[in-house]
Image 1 (tube, helix red, strand yellow):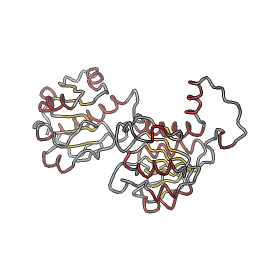
Image 2 (cartoon, one colour):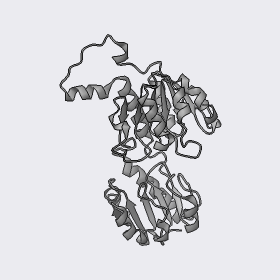
Image 3 (cartoon, one colour):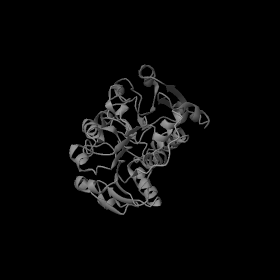
Image 4 (cartoon, rainbow, N blue to C red):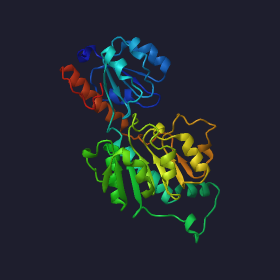
Length: 322
């Protein structure tokens, strides 16, 4: 499916990540081009046999990328790729699942600990030169992770590691996954999606770490939000549209839950007029959960293995989607 190395061209398409620099250090002898905008991608993608991208993908690209035979997604999520379009064009697709498992799982834990230890408040006080005194009011005092219950949606590589890290902190973990037979991955118990809303009232933290699918789109909707304990928090390191954002805003504005920590939102960047920006009980990180010094090299490792398999005529790819 792919030409030999001396005839192969790879296109790296990302607004920020330095795939080209990291790839050059490997001295593979493979020609590579790097683009930073969709306009550049449109102009250059016709040369590419292999495309590495995530957010720049558009389902009309195969029409102008006539040489393209393989897309290595630079992200774990692949909901942006139309499978039928790729199959029709004879283009293979592999995901980046597992590439950022360590980073995203650690980010989820960091968000929870930031909430429990009131780190955002401390940072705000630092900027104001306020030395807050000891608190007699329990509602304003820091808390600890041990003994808290986490309802964790998704027990893949990211979710499984979140479960194990939560257990190391002495937390109770209730796992939810599509295929219960897939295992608990360190959780104390595991349930299917159909049980999700009934499990929500048990949680101090509802943590979303699942892919965006037809089953998970809007999973954290009005019913699930209404079922949360008043002192519970929502943490989302999955995809923004796993949450009904309008329902979340209404729930937060009404004070029916204690707060939320969001690494992802329904629209990204988060629109300037979103009420979420100004809510003191909301912690927002700009979809940086997966960022790490190792990101580019991890993607390139997957890409090179998949290129080798395609050149050998093998059917199965690492993280094969199409």
